[in-house]
Length: 206
Image (cartoon, rainbow, N blue to C red):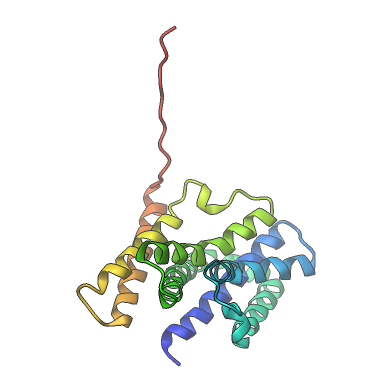
């Protein structure tokens, strides 16, 4: 097994914790909390696999994903206050997670012969749409529709991943470069308040 597989499992684990925290803040019961944690962790990848006809969907073929999701849900539910205390660290892990999920989504779509731009879109779907489903179910405006640069960071990271093969054939190096790009974009966008929110004003003569 490669290091990427274990990082993928860790990203799934972190996303499950993120979903549970959101559910707890909304005062969901135990069952609702577990459902939100599960959907957050595998929602994007499941949607991607359905769209490209990859059956059974990824997490159904590897029980380790199910186990890490359950572990993430239990830990987050049992140690809510401690998890919230390390929320800034969760930002780092979440960003690494969406970067890696973008790349894995691209590779999954590429394996079935889809063209480059569709592969990148499927990468963004893999990374972001678990969070979209979570936010919809918890009555929040999805993060990708807010001012934060989120899906755009994944998209740029995906483009960098595809372009990096023009200069390097090393998959591991290209993955690390792409993760770094997403990390930098997310960090700077939060620190400096970058958004893609443009305001247009138009004056009409009466």
